[in-house]
Image (tube, rainbow, N blue to C red; front, side, top):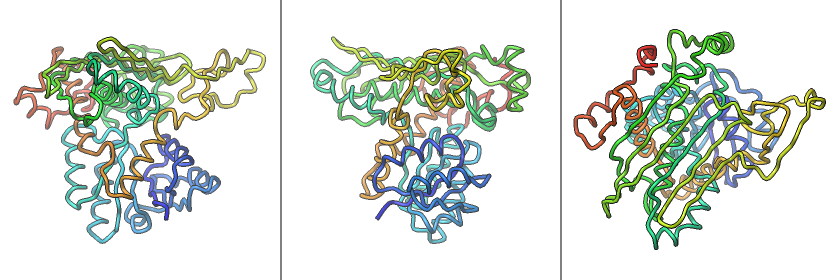
Length: 411
């Protein structure tokens, strides 16, 4: 019997996740809940034989008819949604698990609250960070495992995720989203950099974070022309409540067994006006290295000016594509490329068999902690020492200026 998903959210990420489920065995989309009835998504589910795709008015109404709730809704709605979900479990809903798309919370207090809620009813939980599941990430680790065991794990990882900006207005709003590009995409790079440095066979939380250094900037979307476009297109005023469109920094980790120090560098931006979304990762170890770039596609298409009028949707070729002509990188299976298929398969097996998923919400909490440390570092213009007890206490209740809507004081 298939595991029945109940999906909360009808936007971009929900559509991407549903697309990935075409390639995952033993899962069907039984229900959908969204602020606006997700008619198009429900039609896609049914047309592709992915399940009934019934639209419900609330989580409370849907919960008795599904096995797993997958929360793909906007960040600012999640706390209330998890509270409603927990209430349904207390009322008798027999759920096998709950999924939350990154990030787990807008700040550390919010993230911890979500964990406390689901664990209060002993509900198994999976955190969706797709990049750790990418086949290119898993393949390089498998290929290099004997080398790492002989020579030592990588000592430096460098990750980046860049595109020209989000689709929906709430992503641009630092209060509702939780910040800017550091919150939106920095969490990916923090996670994948940490994982790339981790020795084979060890938990994703094995390495101990020691410090975070970060710099945040508003480089493109703070300029008059682009502020005007953002206000007209999304109703978000970066003249009053700006968020960062560029972030870079370094996280230092310690191996608790050997005492060795390793470092992960990250760069994220919302101003990458090239082919489209680019994920990149490289790493260096003693006597070896690896490198990944998702814009290196086995398929390239060239569209000249004369033919460009016939291109209706450039995003058919690549997420966040910026052009309909010229040399286009094309990925025939983006959901699989980015790891969505594999994270869904991992969660489905975990909830069906009772084993733990690769990543749970406690892992998500630690990623939020690193993200908050990055914002704090940028505000202080100094490295944040994560081993300092006073700093650890401060992060528990810290809300970045940008998230408060006071980004104009920093950017």
